[in-house]
Image (cartoon, rainbow, N blue to C red; front, side, top):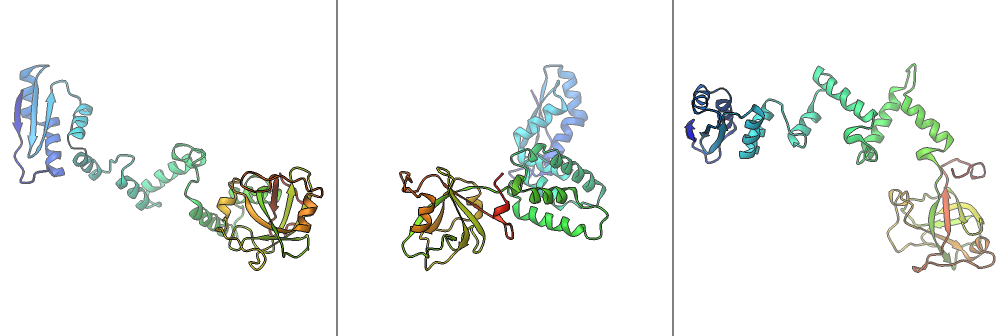
Amino acid sequence: MQSINLGTGSQRRPGWTSVLVAIAALLVGAGVTYVLAVMGAGGKVEISKGGFSIEVAADDSFSSLLEKALTKDEVAVEAILASRSYYHLSSDKFLSTLRDMDPSSDEGMKIGNALRRMLANLEGPFQLPHTLSQADEKLLQAFDALEKTMSGAQEASALIAALWEHNVEQKGIFRLRAFPADIRLLEHAPDDLQVIFACSGGALINGRKIDVFSEKNSNTLRGEIHTDPSYFDCEEPAIDVQQMLTGTVPIPLGISHEAFGKLYPTGDSTRSEDGIIEGIKFIVYPRNLDPARSKEN
């Protein structure tokens, strides 16, 4: 195997210019082509530049040469490609280039439309169930911006229209949900059956209407949420909306003994191993929604 040296560099690690010169020599260098032609199909030549070297065979394709260069020094070769706007899909440079792209430019519109089509078709990185993962706050801002664009428009956004319909019909993400309750009996709570105490600072908002019911006998307490620490002071951290919506964490609720007697008139309730009264759930209603005219879907 013959060796061709393209010169030595002063640095231990070749810069991207040096690597580029080496790759260019591999592809178009007349001396390399001549040597390989003389040596025949089995011939090999080693090209070197500073600390970078690569072995070239007569039957090497462009793809195999690039693969060898990447294997030899992936970082340097990727820097060369990035200088010509060619990136690895997982490259931070690729992602930052997308973020900084002018959406009004021809290139930005082309790429933006392609990404939007993927999102609309739930393809690629937008496949279910990961479509809206980690996009919560920005998505809400996008909805608000979409709402503002409807002012004076001839036609409302199809997305806003669909969400509004779901809200009115209480379906999809707007359906009424039943959550598991961790009922605590309060010794000094008012006997008012319509007062249901919840932890301060949690998912349940003071004044909202609520139904607490037993899955065992269908008895229901229909009342109003009160967050009054003087009656019901939760020792554990309050459970927020995101935790509550999983439906896996029982939400602490405080009621009087009289209210509990309405749920279980015969005293036939049972407790789980961790002391929670089993089979009690609740539905909390949106503001201004009449529970008497609503039902869980």
